[in-house]
Image (cartoon, rainbow, N blue to C red):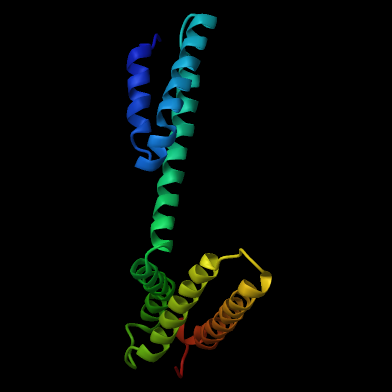
Length: 183
């Protein structure tokens, strides 16, 4: 099957348009030129542009677009306090939701009432853990070690304490989550 080089380069240009603007402005033109050159090399060497070459190039570029978009979201979250809190709360909810559903299923619909205290503790600890983890990654590690080591160690200790507490609550309540008697 013959491939029209002009249409192929145009399609690749559209794919490059999916990259975040800053990446596209910095790398887009050179990536497009490299793709044009590779297509011309293929056509001059074997007389046509192989489908396998196009599929692998488009797949690799699509993966790059996905990666850059994810990195863009991560940077946005890391640099915005409201988003950091929102993401932490959402992750805490997602971490707690399986226990809510499991207990509902195995207890037959909360016959003794919904144990809000347990679920709130799990949600709050998971949210704080996530916020501390994000904060830990944001801790600058430049300058003298004495300037950044204490906040880093303090946040790390907080993560260990919160994760230990969360694990203890889950282990303690696991029979209840699984519909045990006397819960």
